Length: 186
Image (cartoon, rainbow, N blue to C red; front, side, top):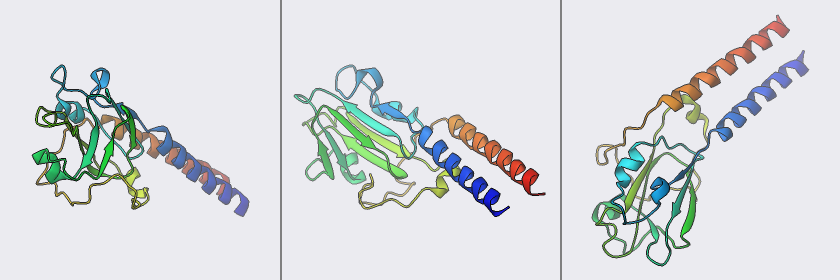
């Protein structure tokens, strides 16, 4: 009996881990246009159509000869001040994994590019109770050191349909496992 309970518990934990891993997405900033000043890309509009979650990967693809990516604080983002960025990326194919909720601010540090709109706010919302089990962010987590209150930054309005579907699917699996557990023990 104890062996069955342990096996059920292990199965539930493994399914929860597998579900969280399997939902990570990869987003190329600017989609097919990439990270550029050409073509009047609206990065605010681009990010507002995404439902970013912990575990997702953000890719900045650009010509390293003409652009870069700077991770900055909210104040630096608002003023396009790249004097002391949190991090600077210059490969032309930069991959950043999201490890915590909140706003993540980036812009191109080439003079005039941020002012021309080459900046993006990646906002990772708390969309379900599934995320409540996520571990606390480490010191290397992708986060701006300045705390940004929700009242200071307009949040994008992503569709929560995918998150809701994930939550419902997880609830259904948990219900199925609970029924199997009860069937074997009572």
